[in-house]
Length: 114
Image (cartoon, rainbow, N blue to C red; front, side, top):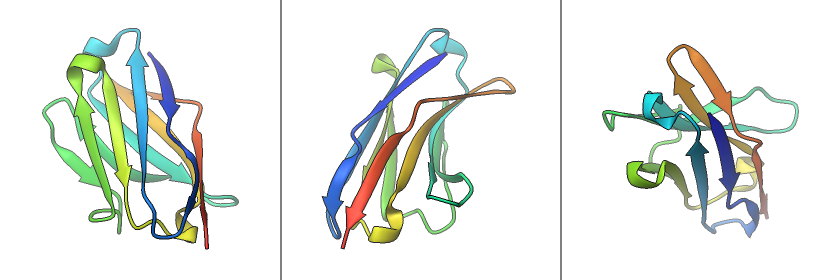
């Protein structure tokens, strides 16, 4: 499984961004697609994940500001990010769970200026 994320960039506080991640390869066996973020010097944390049965899990304090969605026909997962704050600045990584294996995309940088 390969993951290609896009959509990151520089945005002012209060703004919005939408990230996209396209999965390719053995996508039929993907159990869940999700997004994690990692700020400088911090651990990588779950933002949101969506399973193949469309069950959605959000990380702590993520629900409401972030919305995850999935287009199975396009093997794509999206992350809509609203009301962005400087502390949301991080590299956002796409994740695919394939059985017990985790695949990671290359990450896309989101920078929120104050």
